Image (cartoon, rainbow, N blue to C red; front, top):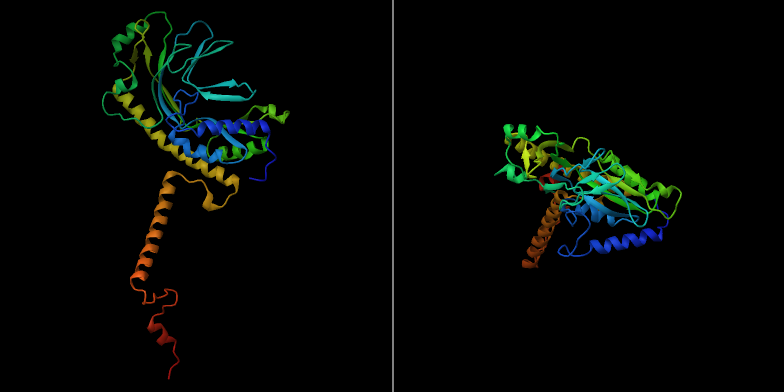
Length: 339
């Protein structure tokens, strides 16, 4: 990345505060996300991004499988969503958060948190890693078994149905940047890394040099999925499956497979960011697998050095041959002039 302009003091202050929070031990760290901590699947990438001048992460999700039961709809024009919500913080910056469910009215949005507050929606399952399909899949997803006769009875009334949705959502990342000059290469890396729906928010920075652009890195194409798998009973608030058990298992397996593709996209994003930083190859961001391979090679090299040192120590009077000057005698004979 080319030399950057001076960093606004407002950015320096916010980054220092965020890094101070992230430096806390995992046992004491908590944040405003429903999970309350940084996902392990994206922790290394976050540390890498935060080590660069002019960038600092503000929110993240490494990807997740979820099952969400809609809250009550209180009138015309209300909608239930499990997507990200946009807010403006105390400093005037736009931030988005992947919320634990929200019920939006025509002019005001009410957030339903993981505890079911606000619109009354609740999470039956949230996992940031693959989940096992062994055992009772209905219990795993928080559902009562599928019963066509029961469903016919439940939907026969005039009350509007509340659905239960299974979803896989890929990684999402929000990065506060010092200036537009810092935001541009980051956005380019995100697009090239496959996060096609990424963009720059808080365009107040076009006219206000003290405002810091927010880069949202996200995508849904090819990875995200959502399916209605049940409904919420009007009387008991219990959640009933509307598809067979085999279909539920298929959805969970599909979500687990999408985690693999999601991890590949996270790795690719790290490499694309390293490219725009124009740093030496040995300093490129590396994922866990690449680091393991490198560490193994380094360990084997150190072992060979120790072996050679031990051999010299046990035979101090024996001169170790230099492999670069050893020449087969037959070759010397061939090079000797004929008599």
